[in-house]
Length: 216
Ligand code: DX5
Ligand code: ZN
Image (cartoon, helix red, strand yellow):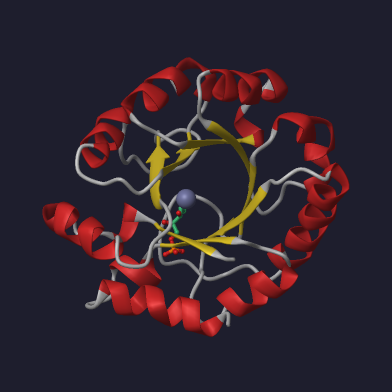
């Protein structure tokens, strides 16, 4: 089973509701990229966006926090309706504690790695992780080119996950298309984020199907 998580970063904000409803035909999660203009050089949505989406969609919300000091606002995102909260390893001084807090507040706890961050940095938090997100672009923008070295990291993360014997999602984000999707799935990924390849396309359900068909 491979899950698809369309990223609203590439959606038309003036038609967001219609586009998310269109994505419901095929999507497993809706991916919300929260950027603070500090951790990444771009500024996007906050907890009120999560709340607005939650008001009309029943698809689980996959919230990717590209922000510094995420521990200060995790509770807000969960209260707003986030089902998965993913923080960046690079942004957390006390990563283990932050992941524990996410779980205690009732959401699934995800941790993301920038392209330059080794998978080994997660060895000692595997007991509290529900999702590992491997970035295959440098975070901050949609529509960038897939970084090939991410494939090796997906394989390494998969090995770490298998060793735990727990069910932990392995998500990939950045440059996912019908060309790169089969590569990341072959490497071990089970959850694919795609922005440009879904929301920048005219027919959103068809764009999701195209990615699905590429991995069968
Ligand atoms: C990038 C974001 C991604 C982004 C992916 O920093 O985390 O979720 O929306 O966009 P694409 O799929 O266009 O590379
Ligand atoms: Zn993302």
